[in-house]
Length: 439
Image: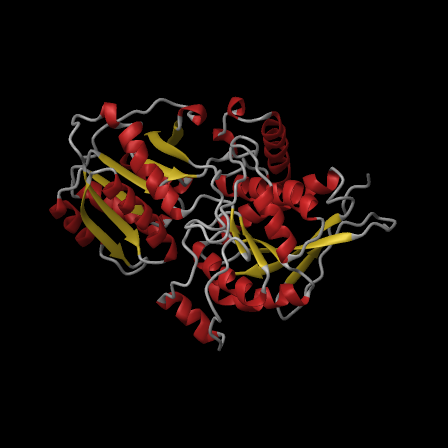
């Protein structure tokens, strides 16, 4: 089979990029168009680029193994910097003949893309964002829609026009609380129900994680003593740390981005706020920059998030998962001269599920066919390279459109600038090392 030849055509209105799959001497094979929609510049550009590169690797794998029922995958990319660009990007992808869009990495992008997909009857196959999407209009989304001079026509059609492969933010919050009970409980100096506080950036991502954590605290008979929403920029974190200290929590869960997450962690350490447990989540506590910026101040902190390639235990995967993980990690290193991050692995694994398992069953890249196929295909945990599987909740369910077999783990910073997966046991690469957080 000839190797794909990647070529670029820029359309000024939307910066569309077509990644073709034609041999040097031409090809009579037909192609199947799929859109890519990731932030590649702006505040989330670095991680969005990594996730996009992972999705592109998944297309390379699919094309090298026969394509989609003999058709070559043709990726059409819309470049993004801010959520305000999503409506125009989606319109341009649809104009280019795309119905299925793989993206978007960031929850603010995902929320707009989901409503746009519903409005246009396209399908967004979310590979990385964890924030809630739905008919929950927020000031941030209102600003986006006002800037583009239209309003949405109705709720997000989850399971039909929006499918999330990554863990829901609420599931990350729930997993963190459950880990403290099931994985950390025997290490703690008390068996009494813990007093919990939650601090979160006040946007779709932060609120999604906060809701899951708080619901699980209540459901497990523990005490929620305080909830602290804050603005991503302009917040006085010294004052916020003082407010948290005044609530006297045993456990603090933080849903943050990297700048605010590290600022709050520094403020807590400087104030010597005593905690039995400090946990965080994706986009902050699990990121290498968190450990690099904080050094020993990060040690003992936990994070609920997705795994990266180096952290996945091959013995926890099926033969398919092991094969694709080894191939993707090697190819990513060869192409980009760095290890495959959690964002890149999420992009690869979750796009792979679409390209290799769902599209062949759908046989055509139309919204209805792909949504129907996604409901029908079931992949056990461990099938995908990131340790996940595929089980999409049906339309009408409380978690409609979300992957019930999504990959999620608990990380711990076990030493300065060293993080390891400590939970769940089949994926753990290091024992839990508990210590009280009081610096």
